[in-house]
Amino acid sequence: MFASTYYEIRYRLGQATVGLVALGSVRNQGPHLPAGSLAILASYYSSKIAGSLHPYVFYIDMAPYGVGSGLISLKPEVLTMLVLNLVEELSKLGLKKVVLLNADASNDPILKELLAKHPVKNVELLQLNIWENYPDVQALEGEPKAGSGGAYLTSQLLYIDRSLVKEDRIKYAGPSMGVEGDASKASVEAGETIVSQTVRTLIEKVEEFMRK
Image 1 (cartoon, helix red, strand yellow):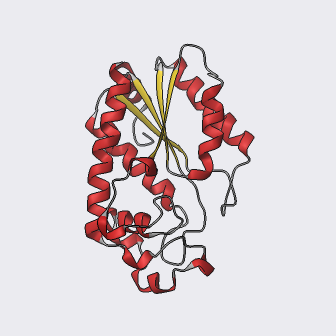
Image 2 (cartoon, helix red, strand yellow):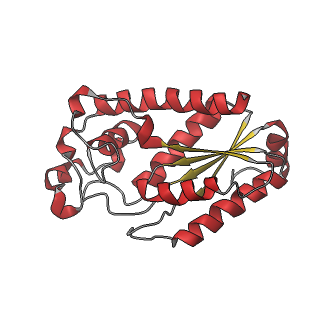
Image 3 (cartoon, helix red, strand yellow):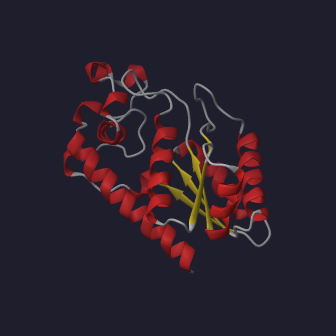
């Protein structure tokens, strides 16, 4: 969006029916993954959804920071106000349906509380937690899907952009480094399975929301 002109954005808005806001975080993901891994993931899936459902989905990548004990975190009330402000602005631009695509479990209760209040008149909100849409992968059986720096996250980043993963440091990725689960189980193949199926599932859910 930042590379588009004002007039290009306005044209796209005229075609769109659904707004899409990506929410991630900047926190410890172990010695092998970027601190902004969940922001990267949220942005990646959002771009896939918007690309598949173009021109009906208007995507803004404006909330990389989450709540909790991250490296850079927002206070719960700040995240609430940020999301509320974005939804209000999208509403003013004519979008009456907005999807909040969330990659971090710490953001989940804040978003649920916000949605329960139906804060913006005449706007429907849908919260989608990315990890809740992951398929079960046999090679990663028993691994936490939302675990910090774990095998599910590591596999996806290996597939999306292998250069983001410091593979020589995976052997140090244990609980003492803030990692949940066994990151050594991660693989490009597992990442491809997770990403391909999750993209399809998320697109289906956004399309269903768009059509109802």
